[in-house]
Image (cartoon, rainbow, N blue to C red; front, top):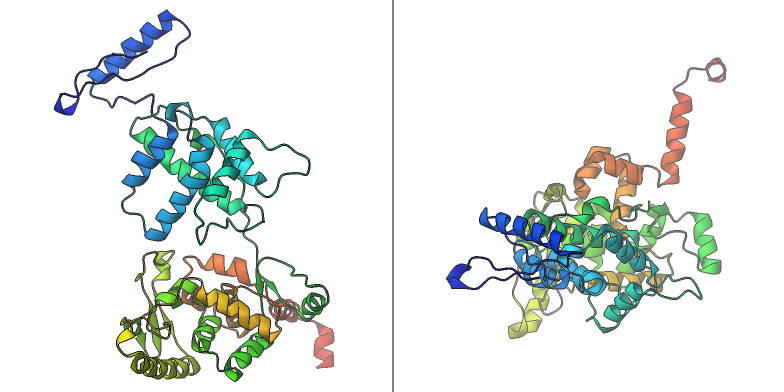
Length: 414
């Protein structure tokens, strides 16, 4: 039913919808409540407002403080999951079971059991993926199932939207507060031991999604870059030894470097910025990295002269030959090519960060120093992630534990 309210701003007529109701008695009772609520000055919910219109026309446009990368991920959740999955529902009709059905369907993308019929929800999600504009981080090209972390992201975004709808009294119940998304388990890094490398060479088997090299393999990679005169060798050397994130290295500017003192300031200079406050930090540079960066600055100067008027002026450290900043994916793609040509076991560019952490631990560096260098907000996260990675570390810890116990036999033997 429609009911009449006092005119809105500018004399605009207001006739919101309510219902449907099972009988006239309940309808009249609800009408009395709604009129009293409107008379109190409380917002009058639009019961015809769909979840789609709310997400696209009200909630997302209102998130004006989002960083560009965060906005892109929010938009992706709306485009690929929230809108096609639940957008047709009235905002006030979204319930816990709808969210459960959405997350279940997301888990079935590229993962539907053989012979099983896709649900209507899954059909809508697949149709959205088939027609959506491809995004760099969307993974639409992948044949792998969605990760639990991606489903968790969708829940966080939709939960934020529904929480806002509840706070602004567009709905009287926030279903997201009673829904648990799939648990996210962060895979721990595994080291490319000699046995794993040998099996990889025979079968191509990669033991886990996050792999790190031993110092010996890292040395082979850096030697390969140096021998082939790889242009981005300074970037790879800096990343593998000081643990920068890809975005940190790509956005780094010359004023952030003090090559006389030997420091690098990682600042919130890009649209996405560091992940935590601890991400804003100053990193000490060793002599080799200082030498390579000074040589890179000279090389960049030569490239500027060669480019002439076509040079794109900026303060960015690692640029293309015409001065433009590197594309987001370029370092990763170039790294994969070099690893393949060197015949080394595969890791991702981001795994160079894990390599830096484990090498620091193997060298005996303090956990707090490593955590600060990586920009982790908690030392416990660093310890939980890396202390069991390098077998040499575990071996050393085992030997130290036994050695601390006094034994007569050791005294006699000594």
